[in-house]
Length: 322
Image 1 (spheres, one colour):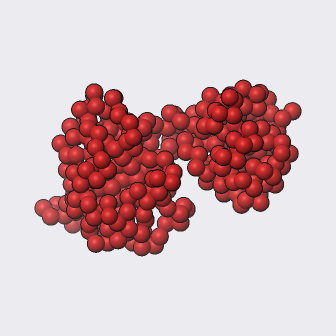
Image 2 (cartoon, helix red, strand yellow):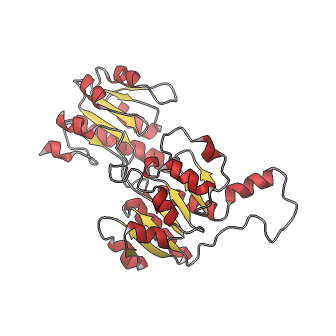
Image 3 (cartoon, one colour):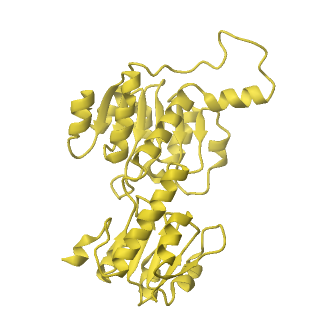
């Protein structure tokens, strides 16, 4: 019987599927494993099911000669050394599509929370400061008929754009290719990054983390934004220069920010935590019961296909089958 190592417990829907055909070992501790622990866990295993918090580097992939499949429980796969996996003819898979609407909904939760200062309102009320209606109390920003800039118009970026219809927003998008869905359904316009940032009332980031996107939003871009603008990041933390963002929030270059991801997760700088004009979430973009279970099933199905010698449905390095 083939053996699989799972780096952290995932919903039972996926684990039960794997256990029907394979010997499955799951990390019993609810924490991110150290590199040496992953190496030990994968030793003698045929499959590795890992999370976006696991750095599966060259050392791990070269250490285990039996490894036949790596299934990532995430859409992104920048945590895996794809080059080495491809050289070793190890298929790597991800879980795209399933979490599109769930993550888009969270992006909108952040947009609304920042615009109407929901977290501040909550803290204010819980602290017993609410003494009655006040015409100048915790004023926020309107969204209706404002301009939304989607930076990265893939699946999630498209879903965020489509959900803006209820606010009758003007939509701009930045991407390498034209997005016919956004253009046909919203009259969205493809523009340069600079134009999007200058004109937007809300900037929502939906980019993969690659060399070209690291620190795509830095001090220069933040200074170009409106003082009334909102920045939301539900993609990958390093897309934003975190220190530059802290400076922008402290100096009120922008109205506020909503973050679900951070540059050095799980570390969140104290200077960021101290700010009132940012809403901070613990990387929960896909965190609904339904979506996380569907991700587990997809990861399991990818694993099963790969171990049976077939191309996984969501293979990110399909060239190994050429």
